[in-house]
Length: 155
Ligand SMILES: C[S@@+](CC[C@H](N)C(=O)[O-])C[C@H]1O[C@@H](n2cnc3c(N)ncnc32)[C@H](O)[C@@H]1O
Image (cartoon, rainbow, N blue to C red; front, top):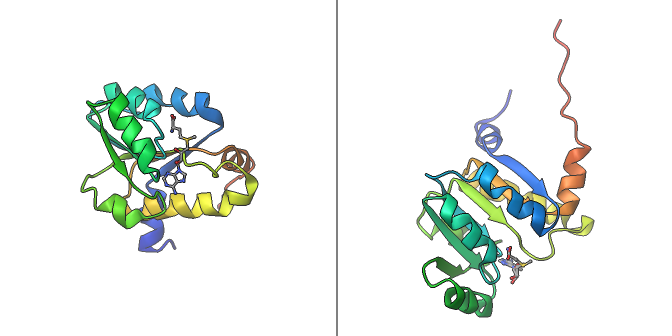
């Protein structure tokens, strides 16, 4: 029987994308008018700005203060914060009930970072409990495409 924690984790859907074109293609499909969206790894805010017209609120975040400075200059009407994506407590302290999370942090696409990617997704799914996390990681997409959840045959 699943534990209480496993049930919390099961609530979030994970969407693996490869490359920026696929990452952005998900926006009209996954982002709805009432959504509050967090982007981890927003760089200059290009994807954050594409998400903005589809949702109620979006906050773009990046570990680099220089990127955030530039994002604020380029999109003065949007919200941007410096944040290390691995610091889920800092994300929680943004004080928003994020129901969609976009993740495009450099280094998450290769197979060597697959474990880091999965731990990051599980951490956000457990703590922030969004409906969906859309992540740019070719390695995760390939891995997920080969996963088949076994379902027991009932007698
Ligand atoms: C490919 S760029 C993001 C592009 C952006 N999402 C877009 O669509 O225009 C990757 C970004 O991840 C950021 N990054 C790397 N490690 C990070 C971390 N631990 N937390 C947050 N951002 C991180 C980098 O500073 C860089 O700006």
